[in-house]
Structure formats: C-alpha cells, structure tokens
Image (tube, rainbow, N blue to C red; front, side, top):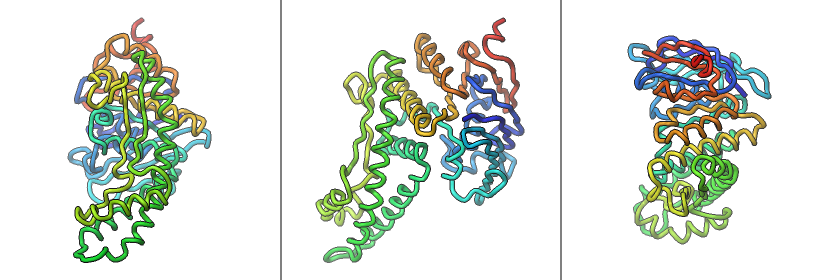
Length: 365
C-alpha cells in the first residue's frame, strides 16, 4: 500500500503542511529541531492512530492551538481510503474513515498500515522487559488487527484481579478468585498465542536484516511467563497463589513476558555494543515490516527516523540499499550528505515548513 498525500495542521511545529507522497524512498532532510521527526510522527499517527514517542495526545497539538488536524489518503489492495483525524488538546479525538466516524482503531488497520522506527526503539534492545512487551503487542496489532481484543480483555481482567488481591483482608482465599483466575487464563492464553505467532513471523526477517547489516545473526526468541494452554495457566496460578496473596498482585501471566534478543551468542541487552544494539532495533522493525507485507500481500509504509547516526558508512549504504526495495519509505536524515542516493525525492524541513525537490541523484547533477 502507499500514502498518496498528507496534510498536517497545527501538529507539533507544523502550522500547515501539505504534501503529495511519491512511491519509493523519500528523504526527509533537516537540522535537529526543525520538524522532520514531527512530520514522520504525523504520518505514523494518521495511519496507526498512535504516536511512537508521545505519552499523551495533547502534546501533539501546536502551542497556541486547541486542536491538530491530520488528513491523508492511502491506496492498497482494498482500494483508496480517506483518513481524517482531529487531535484535541483536551477531550476525545475525532477520527473519520471515508467520511464515516471510526468506531474501533482496528477498522483502520485493515486498510492502512505503517511500521515506524526511531531512536526511541533502542529501548526494545537495551531497556526493561516492558519495552519488549510493547514491541510484541505492536507486532500482534500490526499483523492481526482483530487480535487487539484479546489484549484489551486481558488487561481489563488483570486490573480487576489485582484490585481483588489488593483489597482482600483475609483469612482464607479472596472471594471470587477462581472466577477471575479462569478469565485471566482464558484471555491470557490467547495473548500468549498471538505473541508466539508474531515472533515466529518477525524473527526470520529480523535475522536476515541484521545479517545483511553486520554479517552475523540475530536471535529473537519469545520468553512467555506461562507456556501452554489455559490448563497450564491455571496450574501456574495455583502454584503462585500464596505468593500473590502476600504481595497482593498478580505474578503470573503475559504482563511478565519477555523477548530474548541475542547478538553473537550473547544477550544483546548486556553485551551488545551501541552500534550492534542500534542495528538490532532497526532490524526488528524491518523484520516486522517484512512480516506485515507477507500477511497482507503488500508492503506497509515504512517510517525510518534517523537510522544512520549510529552506523559506519558501509552499514549506512547497506541500510539505504535495503530500504530502497521496500515500497514507500520515508527516512529522515540530519545531514545532507546522508541523503540516500536511491531517494526519489527530498523533503527539506525548516521551522516546520517543507520544500520539495527531486531525488538525491537529480540534486547531484
């Protein structure tokens, strides 16, 4: 699929930006702080209804404005889809797809798909397990939009069960614990299965990308807190019940999962160099892009923010060449010298304003 055009109004530092988006590799060039990352973030939000770096949507609205607006049209195997988003500084956002209010985010994911990489993704490799669980859930949402219902159900049951444990005064067992155990096991087993399938699809592509980049393999292996079906889940809950009643929280389930990432036979989190960790994080996202393309039969839009800063020149060239063959790709660079020669267009960003010129090859002539 591809994004045909996009409009941003009062989004971050973009007062009013309107662009037609060509197919192929587009370089978004500009010094730090000028708005190139904000532009990629706007595209990502339009296509996924999520920001890869903001914790609250209100921060996406330009200073002095009450709302930000995103509009764009995508074209894929299902035809053309118009997406319109109003992001409010306070209150609920409004989203329309083909002029009809959107009821669930997963309805958009059936027609629009994007995979984004940025410096924040380094925490997937070097950070705490929560960052890796977030990546697992991004993978399941991207591959199977309807699967988000299982994760939402699990999170709801987990909150209720934790509240029961926290409020319980004893003695005996908390009343209703068996009921919540059954619901937790049912929804939790579905989440575990979705994550397992997602890793099976992402890992081969991530390994290929890392091998192309560094010459060595990348181990990506799911580490579920509970392996198996509902029966195994319930058995594990029974084993940890005494500990849970003492600590007054749920100690069993996919909210304690992890993802093993290994480089050169060592755990990447503790032993990979900065460049290796950066390459692993980028490879994971490119592996997800490959998996999404295989699942839906068309490439997602790839948004790659500042991928070259931690790479030597040879690895930069390998990344550029690989990105050029992946459909529509927007890649940001701070240095004009890093604009890939494969670029079909260059967007120069200054102070939230964008000017368009021909590809890197045209500029060199």
